[in-house]
Length: 385
Image 1 (spheres, helix red, strand yellow):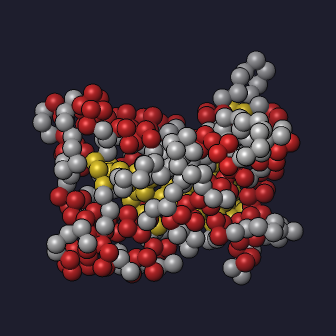
Image 2 (spheres, rainbow, N blue to C red):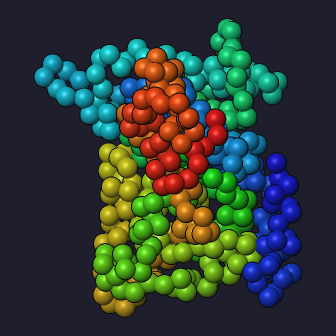
């Protein structure tokens, strides 16, 4: 698994005249699996107990970025049940009673997938009590295991939150057990649409001397946000591709990747320094109630940088956040399955659905919103299962 990191020296140097020195600086001191952990947060959705959406999402990153050997932490959030007269609010952790049993079965199925993958590696792992009332994996006999565990669940742990913590709270809990320097944070309905080189992104971060703290994988929204006109409209100053911290620019060139300054924090798939998350993003009061950092921390970041820009010093304000976006000319890397409306394949087939329209010759019903066509709405091919 460490091959891509060790083989970067010649390729990393191509964009820059100073071949040897910068290529060597870009090489991290260890293989990728010793530097990067994947954290995926999941919560109740209508398609449970099916694990299809989560398997699809996690598997897409493992397969398209070569992350099978990296440690993985899946956090399933807790919930409350809507009382009489209350409406469900899944984003806030309040669900209808009919979702409770399917979610419990989903969590058990997830345990079984983790256990099956661990058994293939020589050890069987299931759930156990963890920090803050969470339940994580440990030694336990789960009985018959599913036939497909796959590369996606290799070196994986499942942490159950007994109470609703929110996306931010679940991420924070996961980070407490992460031992690598970097983390790739994922949402359960944000699959990878095409290949990207995670090893090069980690190399750029490692070589930047702390200048690059966060690298977002591009979505339609984040690509639109770095457009010159969009920055001018939102932040009232002109930003072009050359406006980068020199350490970040040199590290990106040495690693053979192109990064652009990103003036907003997106919760969608991103790499980040673990210490930056723990000590800065989750500093007291920055992400209230364990919600989505994008909704609080991201808005505060935007306001701070916009205010600094009026004084002509946005670069210093941005350096605290160190947020950059991968821009490789290939369009979005991340899609959106809209998890709360996701319908798994078996249910769709019962309704007579024959697959995404672009792959179907015979006429048939369209996929409901929240299926594969939603993930591919930016014109990319759907991720492989």
